[in-house]
Amino acid sequence: DAGVIQSPRHEVTEMGQEVTLRCKPISGHNSLFWYRQTMMRGLELLIYFNNNVPIDDSGMPEDRFSAKMPNASFSTLKIQPSEPRDSAVYFCASSLFGGFEEAPIGYTFGSGTRLTVV
Amino acid sequence: AQKVTQAQTEISVVEKEDVTLDCVYETRDTTYYLFWYKQPPSGELVFLIRRNSFDEQNEISGRYSWNFQKSTSSFNFTITASQVVDSAVYFCALSEAADTDKLIFGTGTRLQVFP
Image 1: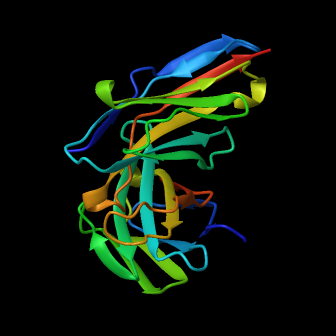
Image 2: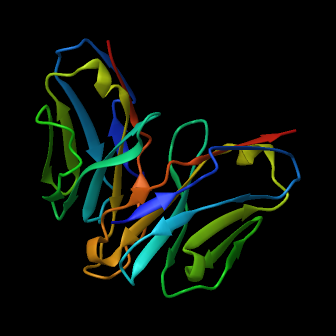
């Protein structure tokens, strides 16, 4: 299994530009998560999907952030317009969620995208 | 609300020493799941263990062991005979049965093992 695949690994962009981060979850996993990691705030859950449907986006910092999951094998996180404070490592993770009160099989993380906004 | 506290920001040890990383959690749910992840310098997050709230048996995997105590809401992680390759940031995390997909992380403990 190739694991969770994120692209790009590194992204440097100028303030005001649109940034799109991509994620391919593990085949067969039905939940997908976007996390952001910064020194100040640690690992924050931004949004997660179950069966391609957004379940909780309360962690999305503001309207500049949006996420989509058009099918079971692909998700995007978009920042428009980007700002220097968005600089962070963005992780995508997937899991197999068996249902209410069933333990998730385990969350597998991608290698992350290091975003730098200058 | 769920919360995970890792009070130790950074720990330094010399190779072959034993080291324990502390994790204290808060939850109102009676069914929940606890995790440990390792983040080596390369940056990826590596799953180490998952434990559910009904299983208080301690677990050992090679040099790694975990001590789960519901009475003190703790899920501590011990590395025996530490090695330089154990140097990493270790995260404890919690998800509640009522919101199983929401994995909340502690702030992490940076472990440095010196030769």
